[in-house]
Length: 580
Image (cartoon, rainbow, N blue to C red):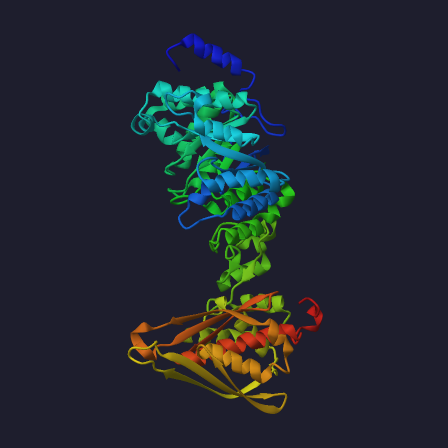
């Protein structure tokens, strides 16, 4: 490792009692001779190391305030991960503030907070390196430092010798260990470095272990490794090193989760990644899938067993905190991963749930949904009716199915309009809404033109609705900043006195899609409206060549559905009454 072999031996001897020491409750790495087939259950424990607050925040479009970082950390602890990497002290004021506030404000139940840094600079003693001194000053029990494990980076980026790079790893770990810190060592670009110069990559690990590193983390920084290669490399490293082996995979090749699982099968005792797979480029290994696969498929615990059901709520909560919509197709925790649309699938799952569900959704805090569309069959509708507490016989089911397919052919899309679908099914069961009945509506828009040199013209929209409410005819007119706003205001003005529950019902989103642009202004338009009463949310749909007519359909369904639940006027099968 240096020009003085005797000094190297002495350093290694001083660190002997530190090498391989694992925290209480952790497992020592299994030897490579332990054969692990693809269907074996390992019966081990692996520590989850979440780096959302550091590596994950490097994702394009993801920006966290200090308050956000504290909230995310609390969610990760709520899930039960072992380690939370908080950031890089000294890299920016935000991370400095985070660690200062975390010390005073963050009370973690299970997780341990980790500060991140790098090895000393070339030619500088560890105790004189400003970055290492700042890292030590944070006073977290655990620190994680990164070092180059690819000879190409050492020569071209650091512009130093391979021997000096090895010494940098040893000195930095030893310095932090001497201050009483637990040290995790990230070997950056390890898999690429191992491919090009395995001797040097392994020397870096050896030096870090000799310095006292508790965990040696093999990083696939470019994200291009494949599971078979990972298995071979991790197997060798586990066999040769006494310290625990961790892994850190990026997803550029789409294999980050698979690589993480392959590494665990070969003896890795720590897996790094991010909830929801956040991170630069294609992201890091998605810890939601890693945790679920380890616990539910491989008999490897990584979080407390009773917290597995928190996986979906925590994933969605963190998605809200980072302001990135969760992917509906995200394995285990996505809103669509246990949604069944095809009639054949639903027919089978009605008889046997595991026909198209590889696990029970509630094990990860998710739930099954039966999506109704033109692909639906009678089984789908029967399950949906049962879910709503409706009694629909065979003839009624057939009628709803025929009507559904006809409407979807016209441009309706009921899988994204749950409330409109429910109203359609309730009508088929014999229910008729009696909140109000439309006689007619009229919408006018006036443009008050500005002068050539004056302010731009002002648009004003008026809507008039003529309704029958409880046998009485009522007419109401209201203004709005557009046709839908004006119609909504007029409708509320007409029936608000009779239904004060309307005050709690609000429209939250309005979306328009032109279905056939080749027809120009005569194209069919689809309107979707999202609404809420603060307790539930729902979506409704309208379709017409006239955008105002389509908007009224969606608006009417939205108000009727809101009143349906606000007044408790649901039609229910007597056997299921009270289940709503």
